[in-house]
Image 1: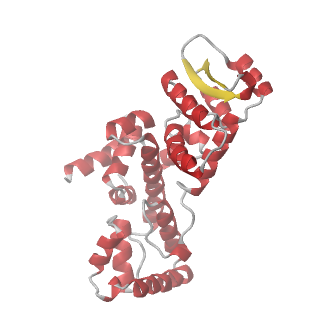
Image 2 (image 1 turned 90 degrees about the horizontal axis):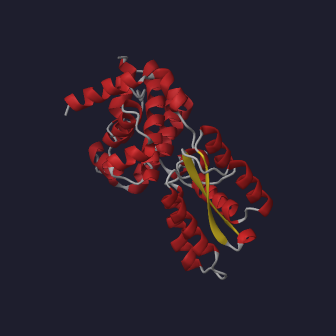
Length: 304
């Protein structure tokens, strides 16, 4: 096993390692793995995507450098970055690890981090880019605001959720009839597409369609959630229908609706394609095999 891969693996949290082990080591689906880890499917997807991203970027980095390449940086800055990135400590724990009374002061800390990041950009741009990427994909921010780029798990997804809602509640009669004629089936294996609209009396319609990768891609491209379970599809359709049918929606109702809507969309079997989450499976397989994942996981277990 190459040393750069081991270093990248050791940087991952336990949950991130477990997500890769379940999906790549044991061939579990995201839904199956989320049940095993006892977390919501959307949360599991976030953990898995983060694990893939970190493993890829840090494998590439450690292939060239033996460490984070922070030579010449301020000692406080270096201690803070190593604590948050290499040891995955929270910001409060990392501040403690710096072991400096001055570093507890917010203004002092922000000024120091900003100054050192500016120097990194000039002197070691590869490490600068690595820290920007880590801050973007991490579960919490470690850098000052001026160095933060939008998280892949927030703004883009919020817009995607709204587009999905608009699509399913504004499906034209022509589109509905075309989908029904082209895809309706009574024969398993099948999956279920929840539909609703005024063209059939503002009623719920659960359309059974043949289960295939081609069909999943089609409905995902058209922003329509797909569920293997008919019960899940019906739960989703009822939830959307109940909200959609309210004539005068208040801000309070909207605040109650959207968290539930996001949760149900995250249970769709075409989640990644719906939200256009970049899939790193192909690029990950180029540098690590299922056998490698199992080997790395066994190393982690023995070290406990």
